[in-house]
Image 1 (spheres, rainbow, N blue to C red):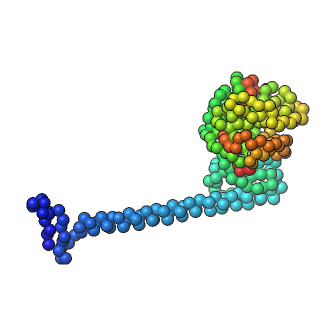
Image 2: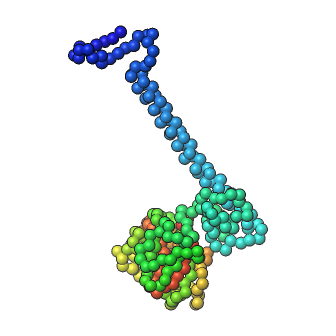
Image 3: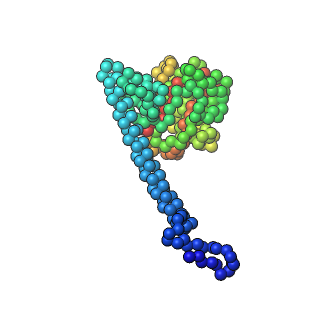
Length: 281
């Protein structure tokens, strides 16, 4: 049967096929395409949910593997003197007890506890960092400054509650420090600084580029030098500073709740940094 439009002579706008006629109408094809599209959307959502669920499971399996390997390391009479980071391409102390490589970065504390790493770098390159001033020289031994001017390098990310750790050593009379909860250009945020002329650690607050009086400070033993592990832990308004795993000062301040983290040196300092990690507190 054919139905002709009344307005356009000779032009067949619609066609109904006879029962015995082969093929599909346009309407039938569109219906099939719509059904296939709906089924494809459901399949994509199901696969996405499955993949999202698999990531945390794989993450937890790897954490348990690292925890077991760290336990075996300690059971053989070894000690972990400071937090150690392991990850892809760097199995470190757990290498003998792990098969294959790691997909994620992990921090192992002195008791063998294993925690996820939010950010990690061996400082052999400036990948992931934004130098804001001064001269930074990456190399096999870490990240160094040449002492020509004060320097600041910032790692990407916005962190609220965290532990920020680095290892540093200096060969000149001026100091170095760590910035945290910073706005990214150093104008606002906190700075932990070590002054070798007085053997003092102090935390300052930067407000629109102006450094406040020290929020907290403490003296180190005379002649403090060499390489040391330094960490800053912040949870809410509580700040805790540690050197080589021992707390040297703590205080409270709620001016800044989150921001970037970075490294800083004073003009005239020759400093070498050999690790950089950000982990949950």
